[in-house]
Amino acid sequence: MNKLIIYLLLLLVYLGLSKSLSPSEYGVNYVFNKESLAKLIGAGPASVILTDIHSTGFIIKTYYHKYKVVYGFQSYEEIIARTSSQFSSQHKEHIGLSIFRRFEDERVNDTPLPPGSIFIGDRNFGSWRKNRNNDKEWRFYRVYRHLPAYLGWGKFHPTYKFYQEVQVRLNNNKVFFGFNDEFGLNGEISKQYFPSFYKRNSDKQINFKGFFKDYLKRNF
Image (cartoon, rainbow, N blue to C red):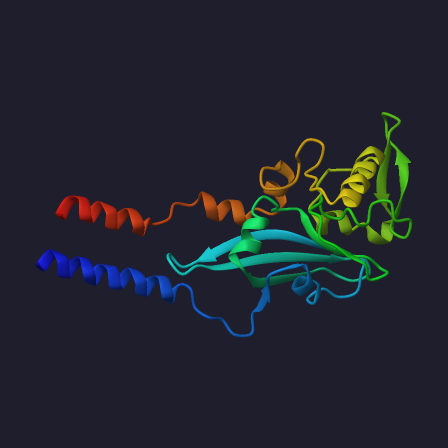
């Protein structure tokens, strides 16, 4: 009987922790689809990059996304929003990708694409130049030289072939991680320039569920 009481007390503590780590926040934006995300984004052109996914609570889960919104004509901003379980699951492989973009004419699109795809090929921001291999590469004008850093490109230079593939995926609403999967959950560029998600998930965390299973196994 005493063991049963102890178990019940532990279970109540477990449920209490679940609730306390999954509070109802006030004043935090809630994103559950493209339309609700669009309301948070200012004038285009803008590329919304998913930089982190996080959840709190053990039983009662609360999901969060962190976005980096890179604008063409102003500085970037970062947004943290609560999301639904479905929306979070839908984008779990899209870390480091642009999951939403607003064009200058106010059109919107939510096909997951490499960050900054909206700026490639736009003559307002840059031009095509031939590299040493005689392939055309996209280069931003000097006034927009900050954009590659904001977008997390590093040494990546999109080619004209890359641009053509982006347009095909855009028209067919199909996700694109890059020809060599440089971007997205398993992309080396995403891992390097948006590390918070990867660092947190590599850290060891207490497994309360395992604790209770082990307790029951040893005592009942």
